[in-house]
Image (cartoon, rainbow, N blue to C red; front, side):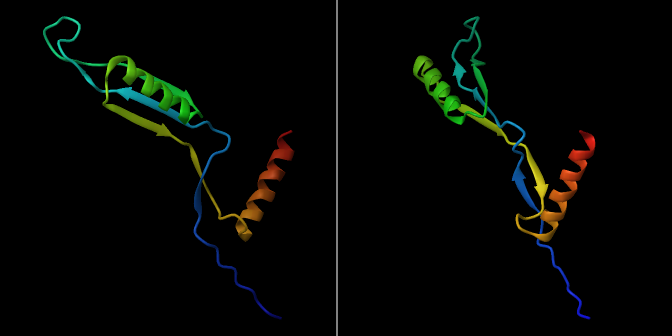
Length: 106
């Protein structure tokens, strides 16, 4: 009788396909004199969109063209999950277990 030893590779981080990525652009340019004409204030323009990086870029450029502002902060949020590497023995076992749970809940 022979024994087999399975070595599992490290788990990996992968995007959660069930969640949308969020893109947020904030203008941080200073408006001289501000609303009251006394103190400089920061522009409060912001744009938020789900799953459309190109639209976030387009809106940022449109704001810059309209106002002359050039200082922005971009934030993106991408939800991830920890998963065994694709093709590993553990990935197959996990997939079978998830299918079994899904069948029981329906």
